[in-house]
Image (spheres, rainbow, N blue to C red):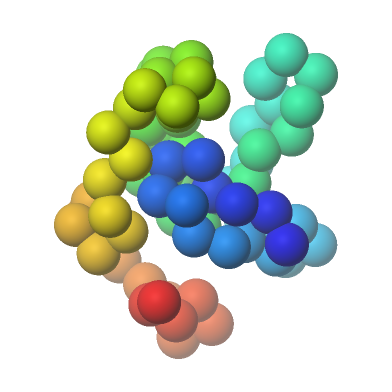
Amino acid sequence: MAIDPVCNMEVEEATAQWTSEYKGNMYYFCAPGCKVSFDADPEKYLSGSGDQTPHQDHGHDHHPEHPHH
């Protein structure tokens, strides 16, 4: 399992629908909103200084195959 750097949710690499490559590393996201946030400012989420909004508060829809944690 990978950790979504935006919301810290676990993401299965094999089935992740949203990914980004940054500085030679692959990052996996639970939803398109997390990918968009990461792509806009990767260093914010990788430096540890980002606000890392709790998952339930950053406004994306969950699908049946992607249960809310």
